Length: 159
Image (cartoon, rainbow, N blue to C red; front, side, top):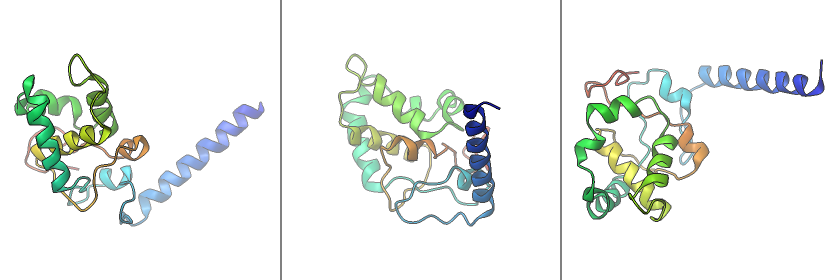
């Protein structure tokens, strides 16, 4: 077997073993730690709290000043939005907004404004606020799946 293939096999085995172990451990997270993808997919009763109220309030201000020039809140709460984004990781949503908005001048807002805007979108979709701010770290955001509260509609609104 070629060395690269052996390395890839060992690496894949380690990743699978770690994933299985993560699925059987407690899903409690240390404060500030990225929320585990496993914790979100194992049918917990409560949704993760990945943003703060103050961050969502800041996102509402960004929305009002910048986003509302072109968008209605229904653009980020309606069935088309939910069909596209529910089940996707939050980094995909954050990065799409960061690299395409504002229209005609994408990427010009501070990264914290983009995170606050995503926090506001989560709040608009009924997701609960918590004690930790939504991060701008790509790895941490990639580990968080956008889900909806039970009863809010959408194919992935539960579990």
